[in-house]
Image (tube, rainbow, N blue to C red; front, side, top):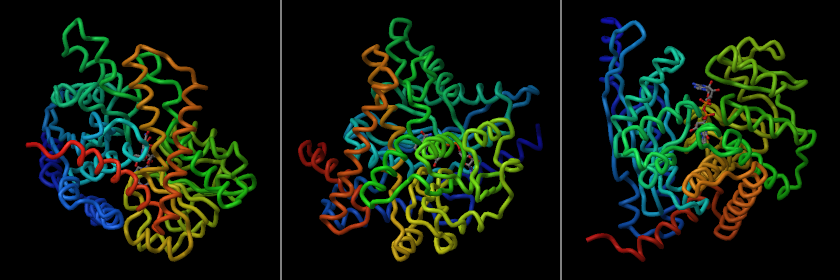
Length: 439
Ligand code: NAD
Protein backbone atom coordinates (compact mmCIF):
# COMPACT_ATOMS: atom_id res chain seq x y z
CA UNK A 1 0.00 0.00 0.00
CA UNK A 2 2.76 2.46 0.93
CA UNK A 3 4.64 2.02 -2.36
CA UNK A 4 1.43 2.51 -4.34
CA UNK A 5 0.49 5.55 -2.26
CA UNK A 6 3.93 7.05 -3.05
CA UNK A 7 3.32 6.34 -6.74
CA UNK A 8 -0.07 8.07 -6.53
CA UNK A 9 1.52 11.07 -4.86
CA UNK A 10 4.11 11.44 -7.60
CA UNK A 11 1.51 10.95 -10.34
CA UNK A 12 -0.90 13.41 -8.77
CA UNK A 13 1.80 16.06 -8.47
CA UNK A 14 2.37 15.85 -12.20
CA UNK A 15 -1.24 15.41 -13.12
CA UNK A 16 -2.87 18.80 -13.38
CA UNK A 17 -2.57 21.05 -16.37
CA UNK A 18 0.49 19.69 -18.12
CA UNK A 19 0.64 16.61 -20.28
CA UNK A 20 2.94 13.88 -18.93
CA UNK A 21 4.67 13.35 -22.28
CA UNK A 22 6.88 15.87 -24.06
CA UNK A 23 4.46 15.99 -26.98
CA UNK A 24 2.72 19.22 -27.91
CA UNK A 25 0.07 20.37 -25.47
CA UNK A 26 -3.14 19.14 -27.03
CA UNK A 27 -5.11 22.15 -25.79
CA UNK A 28 -2.76 24.46 -27.74
CA UNK A 29 -3.58 22.40 -30.83
CA UNK A 30 -7.33 22.69 -30.16
CA UNK A 31 -7.09 26.45 -29.59
CA UNK A 32 -5.03 26.97 -32.74
CA UNK A 33 -7.62 25.03 -34.77
CA UNK A 34 -10.34 27.26 -33.31
CA UNK A 35 -8.34 30.44 -34.05
CA UNK A 36 -7.85 29.41 -37.66
CA UNK A 37 -11.54 28.68 -38.24
CA UNK A 38 -12.64 31.79 -36.30
CA UNK A 39 -10.55 33.93 -38.64
CA UNK A 40 -11.86 32.20 -41.77
CA UNK A 41 -15.46 32.67 -40.56
CA UNK A 42 -15.07 36.16 -39.11
CA UNK A 43 -16.31 34.96 -35.70
CA UNK A 44 -17.27 37.78 -33.30
CA UNK A 45 -14.31 38.40 -30.99
CA UNK A 46 -16.47 38.18 -27.81
CA UNK A 47 -17.82 34.79 -28.83
CA UNK A 48 -14.33 33.66 -29.80
CA UNK A 49 -13.06 34.65 -26.35
CA UNK A 50 -15.87 32.74 -24.61
CA UNK A 51 -15.24 29.62 -26.68
CA UNK A 52 -11.49 29.59 -26.02
CA UNK A 53 -12.11 28.39 -22.44
CA UNK A 54 -14.50 25.80 -20.99
CA UNK A 55 -17.31 26.94 -18.72
CA UNK A 56 -16.49 24.52 -15.91
CA UNK A 57 -13.39 22.49 -14.99
CA UNK A 58 -13.89 19.99 -12.20
CA UNK A 59 -11.05 17.99 -10.61
CA UNK A 60 -11.90 15.39 -7.99
CA UNK A 61 -9.43 13.42 -5.85
CA UNK A 62 -11.16 10.40 -4.36
CA UNK A 63 -10.06 7.36 -2.35
CA UNK A 64 -11.06 3.81 -3.34
CA UNK A 65 -10.58 0.53 -1.50
CA UNK A 66 -8.55 -2.04 -3.43
CA UNK A 67 -9.14 -5.80 -3.38
CA UNK A 68 -6.35 -6.23 -0.78
CA UNK A 69 -8.16 -3.74 1.52
CA UNK A 70 -5.61 -0.97 0.97
CA UNK A 71 -6.82 2.46 -0.20
CA UNK A 72 -5.60 4.42 -3.22
CA UNK A 73 -6.26 7.99 -4.19
CA UNK A 74 -7.50 8.61 -7.76
CA UNK A 75 -7.76 11.82 -9.75
CA UNK A 76 -10.85 12.36 -11.90
CA UNK A 77 -11.81 15.17 -14.26
CA UNK A 78 -14.94 16.53 -15.84
CA UNK A 79 -14.64 19.52 -18.13
CA UNK A 80 -17.82 21.17 -19.42
CA UNK A 81 -16.87 23.28 -22.38
CA UNK A 82 -20.12 24.79 -23.63
CA UNK A 83 -23.87 24.18 -23.32
CA UNK A 84 -25.46 26.89 -25.41
CA UNK A 85 -26.76 24.27 -27.88
CA UNK A 86 -28.00 21.80 -25.25
CA UNK A 87 -26.83 19.64 -22.31
CA UNK A 88 -23.09 19.00 -22.02
CA UNK A 89 -22.16 15.72 -23.74
CA UNK A 90 -18.93 13.74 -23.94
CA UNK A 91 -17.01 10.63 -23.02
CA UNK A 92 -15.29 9.39 -19.90
CA UNK A 93 -11.74 8.13 -20.43
CA UNK A 94 -9.81 5.72 -18.18
CA UNK A 95 -6.14 6.10 -19.11
CA UNK A 96 -2.88 6.80 -17.22
CA UNK A 97 -2.23 9.93 -19.30
CA UNK A 98 -5.57 11.68 -18.72
CA UNK A 99 -4.87 15.29 -17.69
CA UNK A 100 -6.74 18.57 -17.47
CA UNK A 101 -5.65 20.07 -20.78
CA UNK A 102 -6.49 16.84 -22.59
CA UNK A 103 -10.02 16.96 -21.14
CA UNK A 104 -10.30 20.65 -22.10
CA UNK A 105 -9.30 19.91 -25.69
CA UNK A 106 -11.58 16.86 -25.94
CA UNK A 107 -14.49 18.79 -24.40
CA UNK A 108 -14.14 21.63 -26.92
CA UNK A 109 -14.05 19.12 -29.80
CA UNK A 110 -17.36 17.71 -28.49
CA UNK A 111 -18.90 21.20 -28.66
CA UNK A 112 -17.90 21.56 -32.32
CA UNK A 113 -18.84 17.96 -33.17
CA UNK A 114 -22.39 18.25 -31.81
CA UNK A 115 -22.87 21.65 -33.46
CA UNK A 116 -21.58 20.30 -36.80
CA UNK A 117 -23.89 17.27 -36.59
CA UNK A 118 -26.82 19.55 -35.65
CA UNK A 119 -27.42 17.54 -32.48
CA UNK A 120 -28.91 19.54 -29.56
CA UNK A 121 -25.98 18.94 -27.19
CA UNK A 122 -23.00 20.93 -25.99
CA UNK A 123 -19.52 19.61 -25.26
CA UNK A 124 -17.85 17.96 -22.26
CA UNK A 125 -15.23 15.33 -21.50
CA UNK A 126 -13.79 13.67 -18.45
CA UNK A 127 -11.82 10.78 -17.18
CA UNK A 128 -9.83 9.17 -14.44
CA UNK A 129 -6.06 9.09 -14.53
CA UNK A 130 -5.25 5.39 -14.08
CA UNK A 131 -4.49 2.26 -16.07
CA UNK A 132 -7.56 -0.02 -16.02
CA UNK A 133 -5.49 -3.00 -17.23
CA UNK A 134 -3.74 -2.99 -13.84
CA UNK A 135 -6.99 -3.36 -11.86
CA UNK A 136 -9.53 -6.13 -11.31
CA UNK A 137 -13.10 -5.69 -12.56
CA UNK A 138 -14.30 -5.25 -8.96
CA UNK A 139 -11.77 -2.46 -8.37
CA UNK A 140 -12.81 -0.78 -11.63
CA UNK A 141 -16.44 -0.98 -10.51
CA UNK A 142 -15.64 0.71 -7.17
CA UNK A 143 -13.50 3.38 -8.91
CA UNK A 144 -16.35 4.08 -11.38
CA UNK A 145 -19.06 4.23 -8.74
CA UNK A 146 -17.02 6.41 -6.35
CA UNK A 147 -16.20 8.88 -9.13
CA UNK A 148 -19.84 8.99 -10.29
CA UNK A 149 -20.99 9.62 -6.74
CA UNK A 150 -18.40 12.38 -6.36
CA UNK A 151 -19.61 14.00 -9.61
CA UNK A 152 -23.04 14.19 -7.95
CA UNK A 153 -25.35 16.70 -9.59
CA UNK A 154 -22.60 17.88 -11.95
CA UNK A 155 -24.01 15.26 -14.34
CA UNK A 156 -27.63 14.47 -15.23
CA UNK A 157 -29.83 13.55 -18.23
CA UNK A 158 -30.69 17.19 -18.90
CA UNK A 159 -27.41 18.69 -17.77
CA UNK A 160 -24.30 16.62 -18.63
CA UNK A 161 -24.39 13.17 -20.20
CA UNK A 162 -21.20 11.05 -20.18
CA UNK A 163 -20.48 8.18 -22.61
CA UNK A 164 -17.73 5.59 -23.23
CA UNK A 165 -14.32 6.65 -24.52
CA UNK A 166 -10.85 5.11 -24.30
CA UNK A 167 -10.67 2.46 -21.59
CA UNK A 168 -14.40 2.55 -20.78
CA UNK A 169 -17.27 0.40 -22.05
CA UNK A 170 -20.99 -0.30 -21.76
CA UNK A 171 -20.58 -2.05 -18.36
CA UNK A 172 -18.89 1.05 -16.93
CA UNK A 173 -21.74 3.20 -18.26
CA UNK A 174 -24.28 0.89 -16.59
CA UNK A 175 -22.43 1.22 -13.25
CA UNK A 176 -22.45 5.01 -13.67
CA UNK A 177 -26.18 4.98 -14.44
CA UNK A 178 -26.98 2.70 -11.50
CA UNK A 179 -24.94 4.81 -9.06
CA UNK A 180 -26.56 8.02 -10.28
CA UNK A 181 -30.07 6.48 -10.17
CA UNK A 182 -29.57 5.23 -6.64
CA UNK A 183 -28.63 8.70 -5.45
CA UNK A 184 -31.86 10.12 -6.94
CA UNK A 185 -35.38 9.88 -5.58
CA UNK A 186 -37.25 6.54 -5.88
CA UNK A 187 -39.92 8.14 -8.06
CA UNK A 188 -37.48 9.59 -10.59
CA UNK A 189 -35.33 6.50 -11.00
CA UNK A 190 -36.35 5.56 -14.51
CA UNK A 191 -36.30 9.12 -15.76
CA UNK A 192 -32.59 9.18 -14.83
CA UNK A 193 -31.67 6.37 -17.23
CA UNK A 194 -30.47 8.90 -19.80
CA UNK A 195 -27.70 10.23 -17.52
CA UNK A 196 -25.21 8.25 -19.62
CA UNK A 197 -25.23 6.80 -23.13
CA UNK A 198 -23.37 3.81 -24.50
CA UNK A 199 -25.13 1.49 -22.03
CA UNK A 200 -25.81 -2.18 -22.74
CA UNK A 201 -29.03 -2.66 -24.71
CA UNK A 202 -30.59 -4.56 -21.80
CA UNK A 203 -29.98 -1.62 -19.43
CA UNK A 204 -31.36 1.04 -21.76
CA UNK A 205 -28.73 1.34 -24.48
CA UNK A 206 -29.39 1.66 -28.20
CA UNK A 207 -29.04 -0.85 -30.98
CA UNK A 208 -26.01 0.00 -33.08
CA UNK A 209 -24.20 2.15 -30.47
CA UNK A 210 -21.26 -0.28 -30.16
CA UNK A 211 -20.36 0.00 -33.84
CA UNK A 212 -21.65 3.56 -34.37
CA UNK A 213 -18.32 5.41 -34.45
CA UNK A 214 -16.75 2.87 -36.81
CA UNK A 215 -19.90 2.83 -38.93
CA UNK A 216 -19.95 6.63 -39.20
CA UNK A 217 -16.29 6.60 -40.16
CA UNK A 218 -17.02 4.18 -43.01
CA UNK A 219 -19.99 6.28 -44.19
CA UNK A 220 -17.52 9.19 -44.55
CA UNK A 221 -15.02 6.99 -46.41
CA UNK A 222 -17.75 5.84 -48.79
CA UNK A 223 -18.75 9.47 -49.49
CA UNK A 224 -15.10 10.39 -50.08
CA UNK A 225 -14.67 7.41 -52.46
CA UNK A 226 -17.79 8.45 -54.38
CA UNK A 227 -16.57 12.04 -54.64
CA UNK A 228 -13.05 11.10 -55.76
CA UNK A 229 -14.08 8.17 -57.99
CA UNK A 230 -12.06 5.79 -55.87
CA UNK A 231 -12.89 2.09 -55.73
CA UNK A 232 -12.91 0.75 -52.18
CA UNK A 233 -13.13 -2.77 -53.54
CA UNK A 234 -9.50 -3.87 -53.88
CA UNK A 235 -8.14 -1.02 -51.75
CA UNK A 236 -5.96 -1.28 -48.62
CA UNK A 237 -5.99 0.40 -45.21
CA UNK A 238 -4.17 0.53 -41.88
CA UNK A 239 -5.53 1.24 -38.39
CA UNK A 240 -3.89 2.62 -35.26
CA UNK A 241 -5.79 1.46 -32.17
CA UNK A 242 -7.84 -1.72 -32.37
CA UNK A 243 -10.37 -0.95 -29.64
CA UNK A 244 -14.04 -0.04 -29.98
CA UNK A 245 -13.55 2.44 -32.83
CA UNK A 246 -10.68 0.83 -34.77
CA UNK A 247 -11.95 -2.74 -34.71
CA UNK A 248 -15.50 -1.89 -35.81
CA UNK A 249 -14.26 0.45 -38.55
CA UNK A 250 -11.92 -2.30 -39.80
CA UNK A 251 -14.65 -4.93 -39.86
CA UNK A 252 -17.14 -2.70 -41.67
CA UNK A 253 -14.60 -1.37 -44.18
CA UNK A 254 -13.30 -4.85 -44.99
CA UNK A 255 -16.86 -5.86 -45.93
CA UNK A 256 -16.62 -3.29 -48.74
CA UNK A 257 -13.62 -5.12 -50.23
CA UNK A 258 -10.82 -3.13 -48.57
CA UNK A 259 -7.91 -5.09 -47.04
CA UNK A 260 -6.42 -4.35 -43.62
CA UNK A 261 -2.62 -4.44 -44.03
CA UNK A 262 -1.20 -3.01 -40.77
CA UNK A 263 -2.32 -2.31 -37.18
CA UNK A 264 -0.60 -0.51 -34.31
CA UNK A 265 -1.74 -0.38 -30.70
CA UNK A 266 -0.23 0.11 -27.23
CA UNK A 267 1.33 -3.38 -27.33
CA UNK A 268 3.07 -3.11 -30.72
CA UNK A 269 2.49 -3.16 -34.47
CA UNK A 270 1.78 -5.95 -36.95
CA UNK A 271 1.43 -6.17 -40.72
CA UNK A 272 0.50 -8.57 -43.50
CA UNK A 273 0.54 -7.77 -47.21
CA UNK A 274 -2.05 -10.57 -47.76
CA UNK A 275 -4.35 -8.94 -45.22
CA UNK A 276 -5.23 -9.25 -41.53
CA UNK A 277 -8.65 -10.68 -40.72
CA UNK A 278 -10.34 -7.93 -38.62
CA UNK A 279 -12.82 -10.28 -36.92
CA UNK A 280 -10.15 -12.78 -35.86
CA UNK A 281 -7.81 -9.99 -34.82
CA UNK A 282 -10.56 -8.43 -32.66
CA UNK A 283 -11.09 -11.81 -30.95
CA UNK A 284 -7.33 -12.09 -30.38
CA UNK A 285 -7.16 -8.56 -28.90
CA UNK A 286 -10.11 -9.34 -26.65
CA UNK A 287 -8.27 -12.37 -25.24
CA UNK A 288 -4.71 -11.03 -25.19
CA UNK A 289 -5.16 -7.32 -24.52
CA UNK A 290 -3.45 -6.15 -27.72
CA UNK A 291 -2.28 -7.02 -31.24
CA UNK A 292 1.23 -8.11 -30.21
CA UNK A 293 1.87 -11.75 -31.05
CA UNK A 294 -1.12 -12.14 -33.40
CA UNK A 295 -0.21 -15.20 -35.48
CA UNK A 296 -1.86 -13.92 -38.69
CA UNK A 297 0.69 -11.09 -39.14
CA UNK A 298 4.37 -10.30 -38.61
CA UNK A 299 5.68 -7.73 -36.09
CA UNK A 300 6.85 -4.33 -37.35
CA UNK A 301 8.15 -1.14 -35.68
CA UNK A 302 5.89 1.88 -35.07
CA UNK A 303 7.71 3.85 -37.81
CA UNK A 304 7.13 1.00 -40.27
CA UNK A 305 3.45 1.07 -39.39
CA UNK A 306 3.21 4.72 -40.45
CA UNK A 307 5.33 4.01 -43.55
CA UNK A 308 3.18 1.06 -44.70
CA UNK A 309 1.89 1.77 -48.18
CA UNK A 310 -1.92 1.70 -48.27
CA UNK A 311 -4.82 3.82 -49.52
CA UNK A 312 -6.45 4.79 -46.23
CA UNK A 313 -4.96 5.37 -42.77
CA UNK A 314 -7.32 5.35 -39.78
CA UNK A 315 -5.81 6.69 -36.55
CA UNK A 316 -8.17 5.40 -33.82
CA UNK A 317 -6.09 5.61 -30.63
CA UNK A 318 -4.58 8.68 -28.98
CA UNK A 319 -3.99 12.35 -29.79
CA UNK A 320 -0.83 13.74 -31.42
CA UNK A 321 0.04 10.71 -33.55
CA UNK A 322 0.38 12.26 -37.03
CA UNK A 323 3.02 14.90 -36.44
CA UNK A 324 6.16 16.45 -37.98
CA UNK A 325 7.91 13.12 -37.26
CA UNK A 326 5.32 10.66 -38.57
CA UNK A 327 3.38 12.57 -41.27
CA UNK A 328 6.34 12.53 -43.72
CA UNK A 329 6.30 8.70 -43.52
CA UNK A 330 2.69 8.33 -44.68
CA UNK A 331 2.09 6.93 -48.19
CA UNK A 332 -1.68 7.00 -48.52
CA UNK A 333 -4.49 8.90 -50.23
CA UNK A 334 -6.69 9.55 -47.21
CA UNK A 335 -6.43 9.95 -43.43
CA UNK A 336 -9.73 9.45 -41.58
CA UNK A 337 -9.59 10.54 -37.95
CA UNK A 338 -11.29 7.91 -35.79
CA UNK A 339 -9.46 9.23 -32.73
CA UNK A 340 -9.95 12.74 -31.40
CA UNK A 341 -7.03 15.01 -32.20
CA UNK A 342 -4.69 12.44 -33.79
CA UNK A 343 -3.18 15.00 -36.19
CA UNK A 344 -1.36 18.05 -34.86
CA UNK A 345 -0.85 21.33 -36.73
CA UNK A 346 2.42 20.23 -38.38
CA UNK A 347 0.75 16.96 -39.33
CA UNK A 348 -2.11 18.84 -41.03
CA UNK A 349 0.31 20.95 -43.06
CA UNK A 350 2.50 18.04 -44.10
CA UNK A 351 -0.47 15.92 -45.20
CA UNK A 352 -1.83 18.84 -47.24
CA UNK A 353 1.58 19.43 -48.87
CA UNK A 354 1.70 15.73 -49.83
CA UNK A 355 -1.78 15.90 -51.37
CA UNK A 356 -3.24 13.50 -48.77
CA UNK A 357 -6.93 14.14 -48.06
CA UNK A 358 -8.05 14.36 -44.44
CA UNK A 359 -11.48 13.80 -42.91
CA UNK A 360 -11.33 15.51 -39.52
CA UNK A 361 -12.32 13.95 -36.19
CA UNK A 362 -15.32 16.18 -35.51
CA UNK A 363 -16.87 14.85 -38.73
CA UNK A 364 -15.37 11.37 -39.15
CA UNK A 365 -15.92 10.01 -35.63
CA UNK A 366 -19.25 11.79 -35.01
CA UNK A 367 -21.23 8.55 -35.51
CA UNK A 368 -20.67 7.74 -31.82
CA UNK A 369 -22.27 10.87 -30.41
CA UNK A 370 -24.99 10.74 -33.06
CA UNK A 371 -26.16 7.30 -31.90
CA UNK A 372 -25.66 8.43 -28.29
CA UNK A 373 -28.19 11.15 -29.10
CA UNK A 374 -30.54 8.48 -30.47
CA UNK A 375 -30.06 6.49 -27.23
CA UNK A 376 -30.84 9.58 -25.13
CA UNK A 377 -33.96 10.25 -27.22
CA UNK A 378 -35.12 6.63 -26.81
CA UNK A 379 -34.61 6.91 -23.03
CA UNK A 380 -36.52 10.21 -22.87
CA UNK A 381 -39.45 8.75 -24.83
CA UNK A 382 -39.27 5.19 -23.47
CA UNK A 383 -38.84 3.87 -27.00
CA UNK A 384 -36.72 1.12 -28.50
CA UNK A 385 -35.65 1.62 -32.09
CA UNK A 386 -34.61 -1.22 -34.38
CA UNK A 387 -31.05 -1.55 -35.67
CA UNK A 388 -32.33 -0.74 -39.18
CA UNK A 389 -33.91 2.48 -37.93
CA UNK A 390 -30.73 3.53 -36.08
CA UNK A 391 -28.53 2.68 -39.07
CA UNK A 392 -30.74 4.56 -41.52
CA UNK A 393 -30.88 7.70 -39.36
CA UNK A 394 -27.12 7.60 -38.76
CA UNK A 395 -26.46 7.23 -42.48
CA UNK A 396 -28.63 10.25 -43.30
CA UNK A 397 -26.94 12.43 -40.67
CA UNK A 398 -23.39 11.42 -41.63
CA UNK A 399 -24.05 12.05 -45.33
CA UNK A 400 -25.56 15.44 -44.59
CA UNK A 401 -22.60 16.47 -42.43
CA UNK A 402 -20.10 15.22 -44.99
CA UNK A 403 -21.85 17.16 -47.78
CA UNK A 404 -21.96 20.32 -45.62
CA UNK A 405 -18.23 20.15 -44.86
CA UNK A 406 -17.26 19.52 -48.47
CA UNK A 407 -19.54 22.33 -49.68
CA UNK A 408 -17.97 24.88 -47.28
CA UNK A 409 -14.48 23.59 -48.06
CA UNK A 410 -14.98 24.15 -51.79
CA UNK A 411 -16.93 27.40 -51.53
CA UNK A 412 -14.55 29.07 -49.05
CA UNK A 413 -11.40 27.34 -50.28
CA UNK A 414 -10.47 26.01 -46.83
CA UNK A 415 -9.37 22.58 -45.64
CA UNK A 416 -11.96 20.08 -44.38
CA UNK A 417 -11.11 20.63 -40.70
CA UNK A 418 -11.58 24.38 -40.99
CA UNK A 419 -14.78 23.88 -42.98
CA UNK A 420 -16.20 21.56 -40.30
CA UNK A 421 -15.33 24.08 -37.57
CA UNK A 422 -16.85 26.92 -39.61
CA UNK A 423 -20.25 25.22 -39.82
CA UNK A 424 -20.19 24.44 -36.09
CA UNK A 425 -19.06 27.95 -35.11
CA UNK A 426 -21.56 29.61 -37.39
CA UNK A 427 -24.44 27.76 -35.69
CA UNK A 428 -23.10 28.54 -32.20
CA UNK A 429 -22.56 32.19 -33.11
CA UNK A 430 -26.14 32.52 -34.35
CA UNK A 431 -27.49 31.29 -31.01
CA UNK A 432 -25.19 33.59 -28.99
CA UNK A 433 -26.30 36.55 -31.12
CA UNK A 434 -29.99 35.66 -30.67
CA UNK A 435 -29.75 35.09 -26.93
CA UNK A 436 -27.18 37.74 -26.05
CA UNK A 437 -24.67 37.43 -23.24
CA UNK A 438 -26.23 37.56 -19.76
CA UNK A 439 -26.56 39.94 -17.90
P1 NAD B 1 -10.62 1.82 -26.70
O1 NAD B 1 -10.16 1.91 -25.31
O2 NAD B 1 -11.71 0.88 -27.06
O3 NAD B 1 -9.36 1.50 -27.65
C1 NAD B 1 -8.21 2.27 -27.60
C2 NAD B 1 -7.16 1.70 -28.51
O4 NAD B 1 -6.04 2.60 -28.53
C3 NAD B 1 -6.63 0.34 -28.06
O5 NAD B 1 -6.47 -0.49 -29.19
C4 NAD B 1 -5.27 0.68 -27.45
O6 NAD B 1 -4.35 -0.37 -27.57
C5 NAD B 1 -4.85 1.85 -28.32
N1 NAD B 1 -3.82 2.66 -27.68
C6 NAD B 1 -3.81 3.15 -26.41
N2 NAD B 1 -2.66 3.79 -26.17
C7 NAD B 1 -1.93 3.71 -27.30
C8 NAD B 1 -0.66 4.16 -27.69
N3 NAD B 1 0.13 4.83 -26.83
N4 NAD B 1 -0.23 3.90 -28.97
C9 NAD B 1 -1.00 3.21 -29.82
N5 NAD B 1 -2.22 2.74 -29.51
C10 NAD B 1 -2.68 3.00 -28.28
O7 NAD B 1 -10.99 3.31 -27.13
P2 NAD B 1 -11.96 3.80 -28.30
O8 NAD B 1 -13.30 4.05 -27.73
O9 NAD B 1 -11.80 2.93 -29.49
O10 NAD B 1 -11.34 5.25 -28.59
C11 NAD B 1 -10.26 5.45 -29.48
C12 NAD B 1 -10.23 6.90 -29.93
O11 NAD B 1 -11.48 7.20 -30.57
C13 NAD B 1 -10.09 7.94 -28.81
O12 NAD B 1 -9.36 9.03 -29.33
C14 NAD B 1 -11.52 8.36 -28.55
O13 NAD B 1 -11.60 9.65 -27.98
C15 NAD B 1 -12.06 8.34 -29.96
N6 NAD B 1 -13.51 8.24 -30.05
C16 NAD B 1 -14.20 7.21 -29.48
C17 NAD B 1 -15.57 7.14 -29.62
C18 NAD B 1 -16.36 5.99 -29.07
O14 NAD B 1 -17.57 5.91 -29.38
N7 NAD B 1 -15.79 5.07 -28.33
C19 NAD B 1 -16.26 8.13 -30.33
C20 NAD B 1 -15.54 9.17 -30.92
C21 NAD B 1 -14.17 9.20 -30.79
